[in-house]
Length: 199
Image 1 (cartoon, helix red, strand yellow):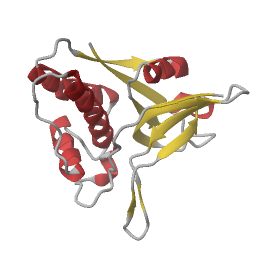
Image 2 (cartoon, one colour; image 1 turned 180 degrees about the vertical axis):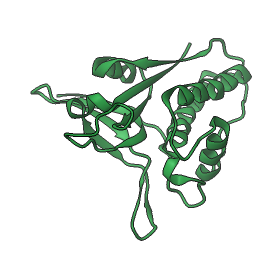
Image 3 (cartoon, one colour; image 1 turned 30 degrees about the vertical axis):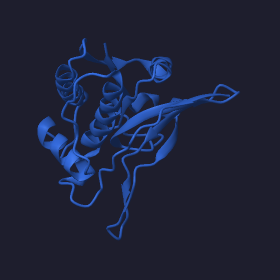
């Protein structure tokens, strides 16, 4: 068995006070990834820079407005653009060299390589626009998550480790974001991976 997992602060799209919570999975994923890189930048010793608000509701609502979130969700190019703008601003303000690059990753091995390099991955599940309407139902129909690890069993079965941005109960309560183990092969047709690199 081989496994790797990165730790980060996960955001929950269903926190009380988040506007349009049913479509805030993209902003919640962006917030988790941005905060992860903010902590990395702070350790690199650059100048102080503006960070996400400590209040998770303010952070997710601010990113929702900044990135042009819509009730229909967030396409991968929009999420990528928002990540680059937010992180390049922080990188520039810190005075550290380099720029932020986002790219689509192709397959499980590319995903694992990002995790092994110490970089979170935005993971989108989308059965609607991948035209996978029939057959095996994915864990999420249309949803952004943060890929924070992987697990490969001795028999070769591969799993993504993702934070799911939480959930909402029928009684109106919510569950905080939690780590989920997702079988890769059963979901490969509905997945989009977006990697983020500072350099």
